[in-house]
Image 1 (spheres, rainbow, N blue to C red):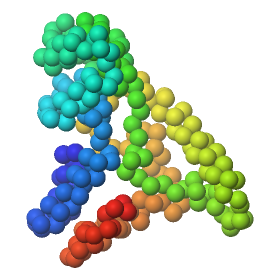
Image 2: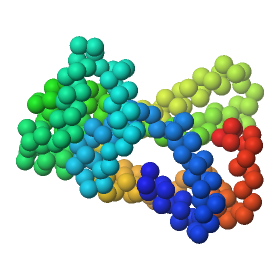
Image 3: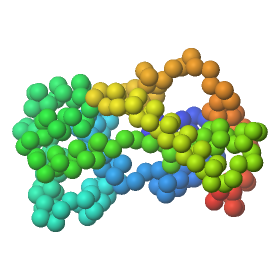
Image 4: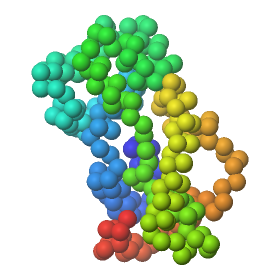
Length: 240
C-alpha cells in the first residue's frame, strides 16, 4: 500500500488536490473490493513480514485476527488462540529460535509454520490454513481474453449456452496452466524487497498480442495529465 501511495504521489507531482481525490478513490476501492480482513491477517501471520523492519501493526491487522477468531476458530479454541496470538506478537524465543529465523529466508510462510510452529499449535493450525491460500488479482482486473477467444467472427452466432461453455473451458484451461506454474513456486520464500520485480516464470520477452496493459498505461497517463477531473464524479465510479 505504501508503494502504491508513493507511485500515485509521484504521478500527480505537486498537485495536492488531484492526489487527494485519486487517493480517496483508491482507498474506497481497496477497502470495498480488494482487501479482505483475511488479507490483513495473513500479513500479520507472515513471520517474514513480522520480523522485517517495515512491519507496522495496524487496525486492519487486528480486525483480521478478530475476523478469524469469530468465523474460523472453534469455540473451545478461541481463548488459546488469542493467547498464542499474543505470544507470536511478542516474538517469544520458543518460536523464534535460531533455526526458525534462518528458515525465514529460505521457506514459504506456510512451510515455516508447519516446521517451526510446534510451540503454538492452535495458532499454527490456522496460520497454515490462511497462508496456504493463493493470491488473486481478479478483484482489481477485468480480463476479457477468454470471452474474446470464444466470440470470434466464426462463432458470433453461437447460442448463449454454447458460448458460455466455450468461455468456461477456456478459463479453466488458463487456471490450470497458472496453477501448475504457481505450484512449483509454492515452496519458495516471499521476498518482500522484490515485490516490484516480475517473477522468474514470467517471460518478459514474450510478444503479447494486444497487451491490455499498454492501453491501461496510456489511459493512466492521460488521466494524470488531465486538469479536468470532473469525470471522477457522478455515476461513472459505480461502473468501475
